[in-house]
Image (tube, rainbow, N blue to C red; front, side, top):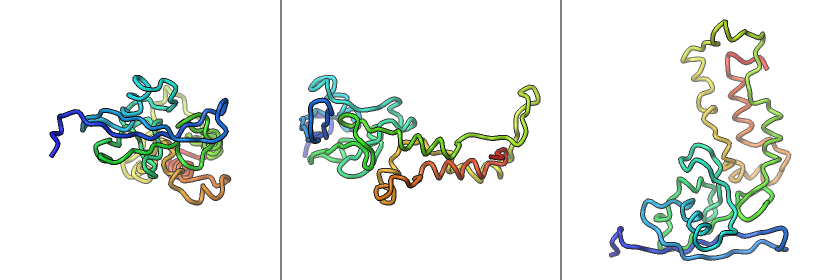
Amino acid sequence: MTDASSPRTITIACLRFNPETDTEPHFDHWDVPFSDDMSVLQGLQYIKDHLDGSLSFRWSCRMAICGSCGHMVNGVPVLSCHTFLRNYHPGTVRVEPLLHFPIVRDLVIDQTGFLDKLEAVKPYLIPATEKALANGPHPQTPAQMARYYPQSQCINCLLCYAACPQYGLDPDFTGPAALALLHRYNADSRDAG
């Protein structure tokens, strides 16, 4: 039995694609030292900082709030900051960009199609009449807020798009996150849009 505090390594295989030099995507493999509290995102950061500075990926908050670090990890769409290397040891961790999106470079995807769909559903409040800020807030009861609260928790991480077979078959499909936000604003008592 291995002591959890002793240094261990895990192999991380990343899909790589540089449109300036590659004709097809390929995998590169690195052996990364890790501890039990190390996320897949931290593994990618270790690779970028110590093994290959050319590896490209997105991240921001490292707290499962911003949604920037969504990747396919061993075929499953996950937030890489919230997914731990210990769960894949002693196997290999295969990291790929989210499915159903064009690759910009390595693990970075082109989100333009999603952002266009998101804007098309008008994900913001459209009041029936304008109210001056000096007149105070637009109050809601807890029951009114409960009608849309689950949908308001969407962080636009795009994991649902990577998991959605319909979006994979039909890129014109609006998709789950944009539809959730459409419902969120349709259910909001302050919205007349």
